[in-house]
Image: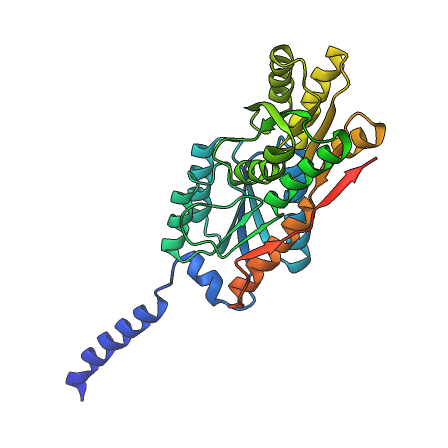
Length: 303
């Protein structure tokens, strides 16, 4: 029996060592009941009030559910966003909420998360490749069409319109433009369109140039409120009376609509987008099924 004691001791140590081997942090978080869930939120830019509201919606709902959130700001730089997401993965997040700067460029980061088994949820904009559990967003195509329909109703068929486009490569840019042209190509005359990258200052500068080259413009559709507000500044300086329609429904835009400076905005609900994204992440982490898209209602805001 004494001869077997060293062997038994060695086997016992091996078993103890094997039991003490720990899975990676992200896996432990999923396995350990009662452990605080940690999610990463990557936002395209926090210079835009719309995305600040979206972030606040995430944080408010996460606090209610006892979920920890790490927020990173891509600053409208798709390369930075990819690096940010990779950093979040290194920090051991259980799930990723991503508001892509560029729907194609973010695909690599989504696939990295997929390889680690980290669920990905996109907000407001989609990812072209990689597995995404759900997209929480407004119907951007419908919103673009609502804007065109409103312009036709206010100015009649054949009105001359300029279009300020969002960031090239963003799904929201494509979808809002697509919806707008469903009506505009039939009932309006789009005399000019140019990107202003969802930015207010660029909206101002682009609108100044468009007015110089197209003095006949009667209306403007901007893919977001920030560009619309920039366009209003340019229009005010020109002394012209031009109908402006934005998209998002941010606080400054609603004020501009009430004052009569902006005719309308297609209002989203960014806080609700953030809230629903957190709820979806919680469901996925608890092995509940979620729909491939979670729609958030739109509303036409006018004076």
